[in-house]
Image (cartoon, rainbow, N blue to C red; front, side, top):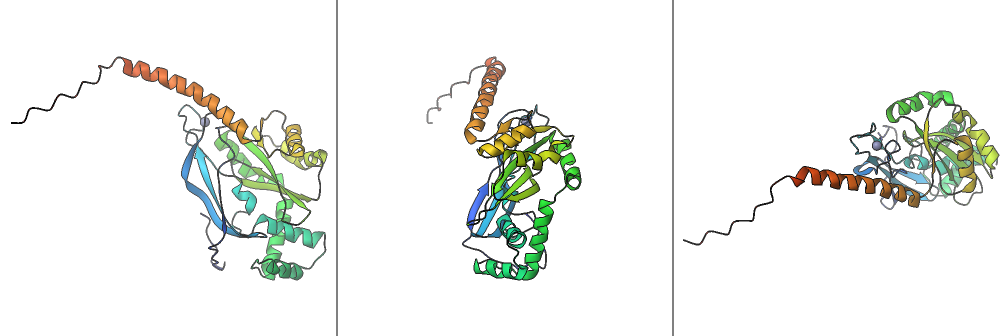
Length: 285
Ligand SMILES: [Zn+2]
């Protein structure tokens, strides 16, 4: 759970919509076996979005294959970080809204604050300015700044998994594209545009393709432009897109495992004497 800074007002949102997310990965990217869900949440908070308050929590999964070098490693619900930045209680859609209004509509921060207040978002002008700076930092994220985090992830997991998602603030034409690294669960870069082509996405991703790290997989929804850009940037990495694909992989791995397990059990238990019959109760005295 993220720590609440002391100056942050405590707000209660009993009617917040609830969203509990699981990791995008169904199988371990190293050994291919199914991951086991963990009960605990690795992240939980309530954020203010343009659509009202939203409770977002993430569950993790872990690899339970003792033969795998990622045995016991946790895989987090990376999409949690697509709703808000770490340590922020505002939705990314609010950041996108502030950025677009200020940069493209040339509206003053105080005007944007009033508009947000009208949408039911409790925020003061100072925090609108702060979110605008977060927005700029997210858009300007350089490989320099994220490099040590990515390097640590590669050491821990043996590679990276890149994912892109497009976020559209309700009722506004602009899209915020977010590139995040799934294993560390961190947003790495963002880009705001009304419409993008595959080539523009490829150009945006270019600095990340030059990083000297192995890429285990790429993830996105089924949008053709996103898939094409990810495949063009990381042609060696398998792209995963839908649950059906995961489930097929999962079933295959489990079938082999199940078969082997049955053989092993037969070998281990086959030589044991049979279970004795329960002796009849002694006659009453
Ligand atoms: Zn594994």
